[in-house]
Amino acid sequence: MMVVKNWRLTPLALGAALTLAAVGAQAQAQGESMFSLSGFGTVGVVGTTKSGAEYVIPGQTQGADKSLSGEVDTKLGVQAGAKFNSQFSATVQVLTKQNGKGNWTPQIEWAFAKYQATPGLAFRLGRMGAPFFAVSDFRDVGYANTWLRPPIDVYGQVPVSHFDGADVNWTTQVAGHAVTLGGFAGQSSSYVRNVKIELKDMYGLNASAELMDGLTLRLGHVMGKLTVNNASLNTLVATLRGTPYASVGDQLDPNSKDATFSSIGLTYDEGNWVASAEYTKRKTDTFVPDTTGWYTTLGYRVGKFTPYATLSQQKTDSLNVNNTVPSPSTLHSLVDIAANSQSTPQKTIGLGVRWDAWRNIAVKAQYDSIKTTGGGQFYNVQTGFSNERVGVYSLAVDFVF
Image 1: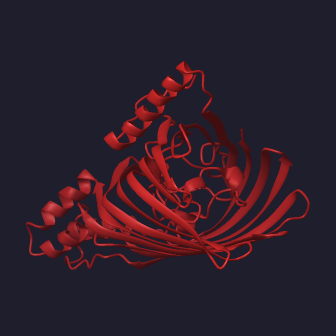
Image 2: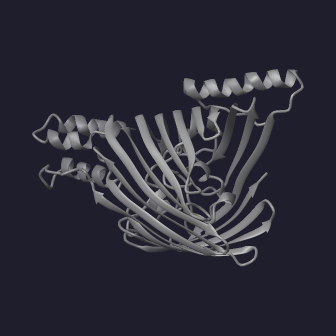
Image 3: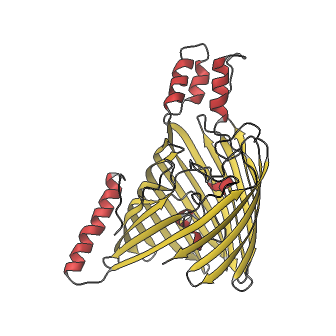
């Protein structure tokens, strides 16, 4: 039995979980079989060609350098579902992986109830995958993806994977092709390198359309109020507001600031060819910089093997902070450090191969050549590492059950 410790749920997510448990218990008492249980996981190792910084999935506190690490990609998820009748169902997913606190405490990733009002119209309430990206719902299910991991130049822009709230999705047919429109609202939180990030008053829209057999277009936009709970930054903001440079403090202020994220993506999977691309924009009214991210992936199946290549980039559009504090001074330096701390531009060329070794197991090998600007998205960057080209080699075994 899996024991989950030290997790917290909002009332919405807790309500969905309790609904699943209560109705499930009633079904067991009546001798009905309505449950499903499944799972997924990855066992992976990562290493780099240079020391002086750690390769991480953005937000993690422990990564890989020349010494191999098994903490970057390794994870395990278990999902339970209950279908009460043709309209009502519920799902709970527990996931353990290295989180933003640097530990492996299992977390409730999903806990929602679903009402299928009509064959094409569905409502959900609880904790759900945050639909920021094309593969948001299965970004952690390595077996479902061609790559070894989603390109972090794009997926690293939003360190939130779920939200607590409600959504509605409507699917119909237009000229014989599926079209889906969706809306959602709620709030979310996560930890990024031991700092709590909150998104409140969050709402967004998504749309997807099958343009032709195998080719799907997706559009998305989300907005909300961003808070970064950083005591040192709040102290710096308060200090600046007591000087003639209060406007600089206002620009740095990380509390309840407007933030938006927009994305457009294409996926193609037909015959032997598989391809995907996404273009994204992040904008905020605080020290978290405005960014643009994009990637494109192309793969070709040869029997049980799928070699693939990915090009990706994240660039900083604006730091959102105009440091008018006179230089040289300690205060000027502190503002510069804060303003540049979240700027992580880099370019990546990735080559990999997926081997569908068994019906439910895929083995993947991937090599990424990353050109950083500054330290890029590497963690714990030491002096002399900046503006480097670094090789990252990864091996992973993905499985589902």
